[in-house]
Amino acid sequence: MITKLLLIILFFFNFILIYFLNKKKIRKLFLSSKIKKVDISGVNKIFELIKISNNLSGPKKETIIKSFSVSPKNNIVGMTSDYEAWIISSLSKISKNIFEFGTCSGKTTYLMALNSCEDTKIISLTLKPSEINSIEKNHKDNKVSFRNIKNESIYEKFLFSGTEAENKIKVIFQNSLDFNEKNFEKDMDLIFIDGGHTYSIVKNDTEKSFNMLRNNGIILWHDYVPGKKSSKDVVKYLEELSKTKQIFHIENTSICYFQNKI
Ligand SMILES: C[S@@+](CC[C@H](N)C(=O)[O-])C[C@H]1O[C@@H](n2cnc3c(N)ncnc32)[C@H](O)[C@@H]1O
Image (cartoon, rainbow, N blue to C red):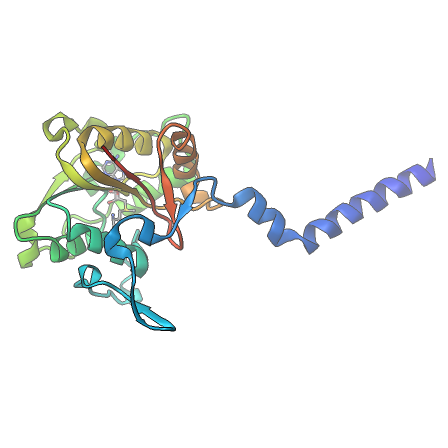
């Protein structure tokens, strides 16, 4: 009996030891992206590099962008990384009709406006801070993502407010669950889905985006981060969707993308 107990204890400690020695590999196995990864050069030709010398390649002029930084001291919530912002800005240069789910501080909206053509139209849909209590949690929704909706719905003025870029932007204060996309059917060249990160909202925003996307148009989803609590529903929904739609995960970003190829 004692030998049996000792064997069980030994087995248990061995198991723990193996786990700690291979923690990184095991976590990687379970938390790695299940969506096929692509390098940014696979998304559009504008991202292919030009050779400068044998050991140096650089960006094409199509991806030289106007940008800005906001000091981390400002504690702005819900922002994209610089690399992600560069990708979205570059794609904005070749897009005439742009739609964004989730404005927040308006960082990405501002970049879209700064980098797109004169006649580009940008619509950004977001929640009014005063209407935040109208949002209800669906039983399928992740708690952390639901809480974040409240934490991120705090702006009524945006980084682009009062600037020339504002002329291109129309902000719609509305819950995306109530938004009727029928007026924008097959209109959009670029759609950025970065609104509520709960399962029910990502699903709603995605289904509406597919209706609004024009031929060759692109949908980008933000915050595909396997293993991150606040991204749990985004990951779950996109991995389900990738079984029926050709979705790719852009390397070194939390962005997934789909192109409506004809
Ligand atoms: C992560 S932030 C967006 C960040 C912004 N796209 C950027 O790049 O700077 C999420 C935004 O989505 C909005 N949002 C959350 N749920 C929403 C809903 N159901 N309908 C409309 N907007 C929603 C929040 O109010 C918040 O402004």
